Image 1 (cartoon, one colour):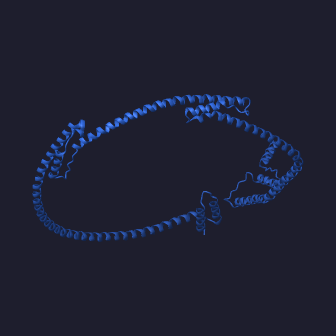
Image 2 (tube, rainbow, N blue to C red):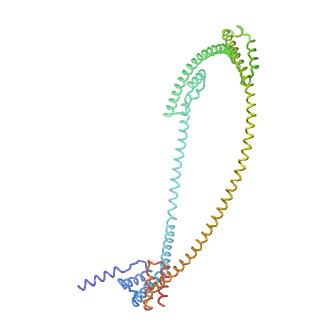
Image 3 (cartoon, rainbow, N blue to C red):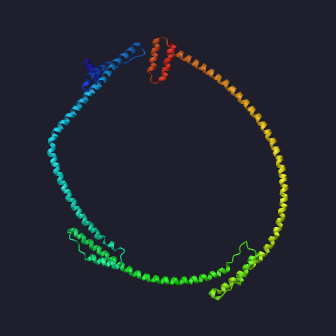
Length: 431
């Protein structure tokens, strides 16, 4: 049973131990392990003098170890950094020593490999350029039909004969020559189709041109005839289009009637429209005579109406003069009544304003008195509240006051300003 207890104690001690592999921290780790074992499970009743002293001593001992560790850290870190710098410098020295002899054969091998690769690349580039030049020529052969666009059948036939007589150049060989021959055959076939289509198009164009010229001649004859008929019809229409404006008098219309009667209608001038022209002129003369009679009657009525209107104007002027005098008299009477009414309203407003000012002054004085009473009541309430807090904070002796102050300082739920206020209140109540 004793061995079991010893083992449990040993395991607990090991769990509190702090382990480090940094040489400079080993001594600090041993001291910290001992302090952890010493203070593990300790409690501190700081509400008593003895408990407070025990807590202060524990904090001092632990703080000294922590401060010593903080001071040791820069030294340990510098030693580690110096060692790392030494490792890096020795590594670079050793690598340079072996690379000095390794680089000689390595550079020779790489230079030869680079030369062979560049030679191979150059040969491939030259071959590709030569093949591209031949491919471009084959493409140009395929585009030869485009040169016939816009040419007539004779020009296309000449171009086709030249192309058929021209041989494929000696620079083409093997598969490339076959492709060139194929491109030429396709171009020749396409140009033959273009030539056939152009011959047919030119024949159709010639037929269409002859038909178009015949149609133009027919349309020109129709136009000349239409202009002749339109000119005669316009003359017939002009016989009807005799305008009478609203400003014309009966004498003006009478002159127009005489002019229409004097107009001579002949077969040579109106040809197949002679009868229509004669009828139109007679109809116009009849309409103008009717308008002339209406104007004569209207002018007589207008003369009588003018006489009647002049009479009405004189009567209206006399009536308006009487109305103007009556309106001026009534306006003066209204002005006098309005001025009396405005004077009475102004007096009433002055009295009302004086009464309102008096009421406002009384209300202001009452508000001042009420505010003074409120301030006195607030002073009395605060004095009573402070008296109650002092009674609550009062302690029986200085030790009790000190403990109470320490408790306030440790309470993390209280803000600094509230803590200072409570400490000041305890001190004031205990004096």
